[in-house]
Length: 377
Ligand SMILES: *Cc1c(COP(=O)(O)O)cnc(C)c1O
Image (cartoon, rainbow, N blue to C red; front, side, top):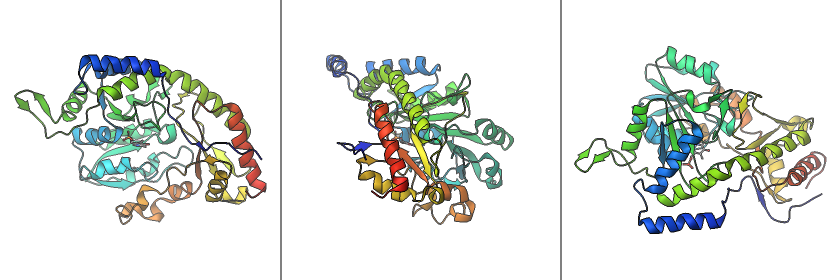
């Protein structure tokens, strides 16, 4: 069986041509300006405005600070209904705002929050729903909007995996009051570290701009107890150049997804979810599920054995947030409330998925998975 010569990880960041980065570095050196909304940051925000097709975008030093700030500027309090099947940053952003996360079970196919289970969790203390487009699978956005409107709740999205995603002609950020994007290097689009919030209203964008700069409005006025969430010039320079590479990256990932799909369809015990045809995908991850009974091995066994072929898959998002020591005693964290999430988290395996991978690499990975079905590594 084919073994990769070097370790293959689930992702590997886009690196723009170094000459172009050197040119940008020279611009920064000449400007004598490193942070506080310099030329690179201004250009980056302008380019993102064009790319996304909205002016209501505020860039940040990372996605976590961006999401914390969004929660704060919407003045959310009390309880916020969210998903346990996400990265730690999602509920932690609530905790930092003295909000209790209320975990809601997920849908078995998209693995996003189950809208039909949200309403039962609403109490007089609920102020919002924080949903996650996990793995770049779109949430049931329309149903969530209907629930939020009906109960007068804010609706926000962790779109860390949703760069460039659309439903039909509608960019994903048009749903809800605000969407956070992460520009961490593990994400399809990155600025070394970075993030952004796209807001429904211009007012909210302005509040976020103020908040991320300590709440300082001008030399004589500090309006809010803000924090330092500013992006710097080096990050912005990277972001500008990575933006030029994103479409190429996406084209390659699209080919790799097709190859995975072709090779893994009809492998008993292996399933995967690909968004419907009207969705412009972000192509953030390629995630399979190993169903132990049909496959003959558990996800954990497959994960361990893949390493012997130098394939380093990831068990995203294990453990569930509801299992963290500081959340596990919440009423909403109890196993009987989250049956689907507790099942899914034992099955998911994120496979290598990045533009420098070839279709032949993907064939090899799939051949190893099929080999492991009937053999031990
Ligand atoms: C990466 C990620 C974040 C955090 O973004 P950073 O830019 O790394 O702070 C938040 N939520 C999810 C779902 C993520 O995957």
